[in-house]
Amino acid sequence: MGLQFKELVVKKEISIAELRDKILAVDSMNILYQFLTTIRSPDGAVLTDKKGRVTSHLIGLFNRTTALMEQGLKLVFVFDGRPPAIKQKTWEKRKEVKAEATLKFKEAEESGDVESMRKFAARTAVLTKEMILDAQRLLSLLGVPVIQAPSEGEAQTAYMVKKGKAYASVSQDYDNLIFGCPRLIRNLSIEGRRKKAGRLAYEKINPELIILRDVLDHLKLTQDQLIVLAILVGTDYNPGGIKGVGPKTGLKLVREFDNDLPGLFAKVEWAKHYPNLPWNEVFETIRDIPVTDDFTLEWRRMDEQKLLHFLIEEHDFGEERVRQKIAKIREMQKQAGQKGLGSFMT
Image (cartoon, rainbow, N blue to C red):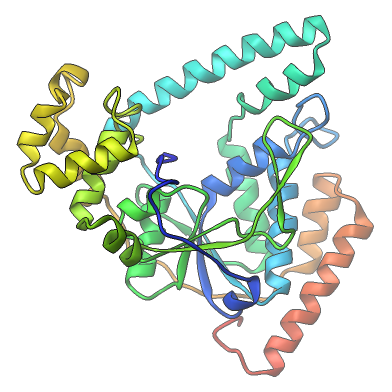
């Protein structure tokens, strides 16, 4: 969703070392789109293997995951399941945005405008089923758990944290908060920098920990009121929210009406903005989204030979770099085994 909550949340910078040996549930689709939009050639084109298959997401996933594994983080990747029915409008809107970006990319290409090509190319990113399956295969070969959510992946990661199955959820978006995630980590990268989408530039970043209880206390809201605030600002289920209502105005309205939700949505003329979508349907979709306990957290030793074949033979990764990474992970897993960390691998 990408909720516009940046100016409202309480956060604190943390170090990678503070997360060592902690289980972190990763919102996989969020991170894959991040790699797909930022790991590109100078003209904005995605990176591919010799057969023309996209590898941008695999390059990012392999490098980031192995680097974090080397630091002793216990990652588990959660993938989206069936989206709620009311999310259809979001898909339609995204298709329109991508179609427009594609046209502008072609115009820039014809005029030789590399800067514009790079900018619009990132907006055309599409994560196909084949690309998702390749990502899951890579993670499995690394020995990292992969979980299939019944619906939204971020809701499942939030549930895992609530149940004590994971320490925190990892995502760049704030959406996990409206699903009740007790702890959210953003900017999880050991590089200390992040590539800006569509640009040959980087920005300095540090991992951030956001604690839901601190956010609610700071805003003086309940969890249900936080959901209402999100709906006013705009979610995946009502893109754009209420015109003219930003985070600060929305917060003021939620506080003013307290628990009088019918009165609040009448005040903002919800029916005028969304004549075919009752506000309570969006609210209940978020609050009651399906999650599951049907998963196993088990870290296994990586399958070196299959991993080498998958990356080097199938997708044309550089052999020397892959072998170097594998050697580091092998040593890390060996040390973990010697310490008796049975819960880390089998």
